[in-house]
Length: 64
Image (cartoon, rainbow, N blue to C red):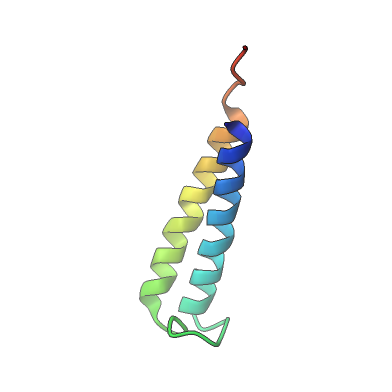
């Protein structure tokens, strides 16, 4: 469970960084390029991905 949450958080962080980069125009080649709306969406995804990763790494493992 912790590993899966950490992986999903990392993927969300990376996708959000790409969205933010495209929204600011740093990564060309998409309809998102230069549209500031995608910067804000990507920024929110980065924050959520960081929170998921921190929760996955800080939460104690379940004992079976």
